[in-house]
Length: 337
Image 1 (cartoon, one colour):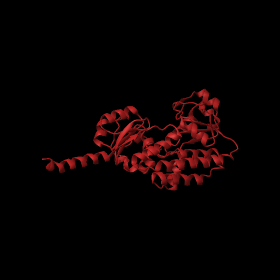
Image 2 (tube, helix red, strand yellow; image 1 turned 30 degrees about the vertical axis):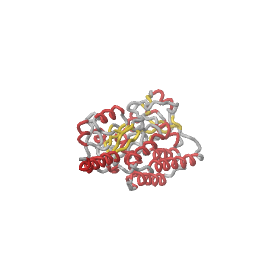
Image 3 (spheres, helix red, strand yellow; image 1 turned 120 degrees about the vertical axis):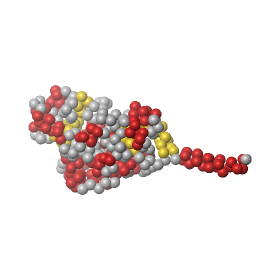
Image 4 (cartoon, helix red, strand yellow; image 1 turned 180 degrees about the vertical axis):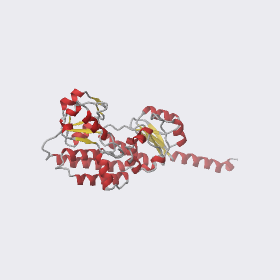
């Protein structure tokens, strides 16, 4: 009896060992252990989807994104370069409802190998329904680099994190070296005039790294800083940066904010728009510094060099070669308007 059962037992053991080999554990950015299949072929992204997608794209895995942008991003039209970097996105599954909440039925139907999110609540919901979910955290430059490394590990590319960090750090070192010749640092404000906020903490870092002095950089820790009209007028920055082209006209039309020198003298910059808005948290963060430095100190950072560095970045990490026309469109910040 034992002899006759041995082939069946061997097959069972082989299947069990094979299944074990096809799974691995990954520690996400809030310390959760997530069991993943050995090969990741499909990824669903939830929440701040353009941000998360950008990180997936930067590891060379944009073709594995299996979910569409949430409806509000599609309606905006501003995120069209998501479709340039990952052309399958428009035809992919919609896993968000009209308000941007997770559509659990759609996610279960999609059955991705892994889901990515910034929200612990979403991760708990999906994990409870059998979807391995990795929580990311991207608020600081170090977390930007760590996220690329983590996703590289997830996709089985253990070198991409070091490659990205080297490009990031090398670019920043070159900018810092050139800034030694800068005569003065302009006062800069990144402003969302619609709700009167400085919308992202990371801007305090990149404004400083690009050779500017952020007027809101008081050591704050909160992600979004609420501002009053009085505070903004008193700061009277040399340069204003906004996240959307519509904000420029909004500033000009505002009877009070239009009194700022930067508005009156036309020194309003619209942040570039690639996979995401460069002024916000994005894997394109080293490009943000280069772009800002080219405006703060144009004599030290020629536009032609900026264009070539942008091209190099997207080739190296997004595996996409952009034309000069596409790069200039991204740099203008007017994509999708």
